[in-house]
Image (cartoon, rainbow, N blue to C red):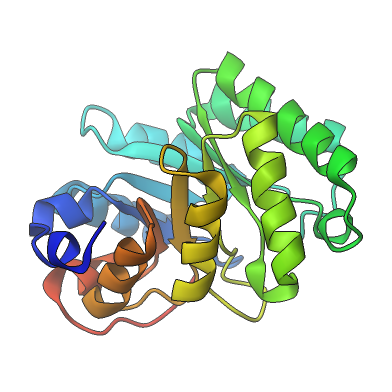
Amino acid sequence: MTTSQASQLSTSELAQMIDHTLLKQNASREEILKVCDEAREYKFKSVCVNPIWVSTVREALAGTGVLTCSVIGFPFGATPTAVKVFETKQAIADGANEIDMVIDIAAALRGDREALVADISAIANAAHEGDAILKVIFETAMLTEEAKVLACEASVEAGADFVKTSTGFGGGGATVKDVALMRKTVGPDMGVKASGGVRSREDALAMIEAGATRLGASSGIAIVRGELGESSY
């Protein structure tokens, strides 16, 4: 999307690009329900939570049109594929419409394309069998440029729906440069999600201009209001 096109997005259009996120380990039920209330009010695309909260979010969002998103192999990705598949199936059974999985970061760094494709495709198959979409989290702050390109190529080959920059817990977040590289590598049709450190409308528009089609943020309200939010995954 060009700078002009991004700047002309309406508040409702921008809200529909945001996964309203609460992934901190000590989140309470009251905080989860508050995020759901906010998502319903602002009409965000989804609410993204840890797996234990999926059924709560599904119930809270029933009939609102806001999707339920959960994370798999989170935040390290260092989980056997079979366990990620089980997590995926359980999250979908609990009501998740979207799955955000973390790749095997070590495999990306050693250039093991076969391992990446096998891991991602197994989760993609499980997600798609449950009519859910799959977003693949790279943790770009930990990867070389070559590893980022490899992870993009493996995600395309494995049949994922989105590639995603970061967990928000890996010591770095989304950058315009990484989003642009990911968009260039996956082409025009695959989703690209910028996540981690997107705190303001200015941040959001910069990521969209670079090629992002979805944003993961705990500062969704600040983004749509044109304010500066705090990062509190």
